[in-house]
Image (cartoon, rainbow, N blue to C red; front, top):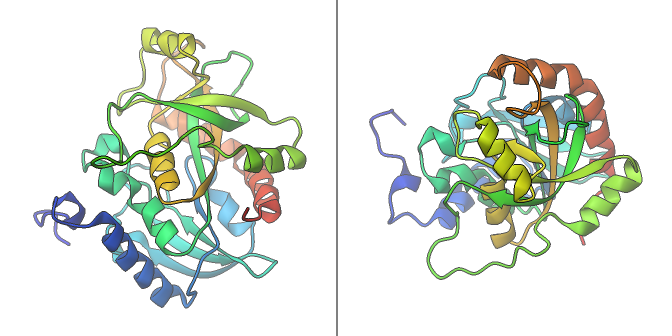
Length: 280
């Protein structure tokens, strides 16, 4: 699809769920796997997980699947992969995330999640790199997301669609994760619009209203996942102290480097968690 061609998901006449079903059918055809049981979106610092959880059956450039495109952000992968887990289940690995700040609209942001649901997944694992509001969370700290605050002023839900988010980040799945690592911290994730980093005042506000982490992804995807009937597990990697919490300026290079340094440890942790997850 050329840059000048309007994207189908930006057309109000397009059914986003039918388009996700098309993408899922293409993934099944390209991978030879008719159904994926679990899906993972791998954010900054989590990329090595795909190679640790099982045998990679197929890798597809994201832009070859309907609705997906190359990641706009350096440091993010650009492939959709099928991985066979040791117990025979299949995991769909989404290495191509569309961020809200790219300006393509919410439908494209959550297309990957809807595609995962259409592919048969019952569990959605959403990971990200985030700024830590708690001073004790140094870069490299993995944190279970217990809840979120959506500060994007948007939602993936369209029309009179009412979805209960009481247990959005599954208490059951978080319990399984803590069985693997009882020391895992938990916190509330705040999604800002981006692409600018938050100001110190915005970070203070986030802390006052209950936030522990700041980032530019995940919340919109999580809402769409619940709408699609998926059980959600969210994990953040603290890549930096949020603005005003630490000293010095923030940079994407810092985020990427912190993720790279932590990747072997958190990738192995997530692989152990994935092995223990089972559909409810």
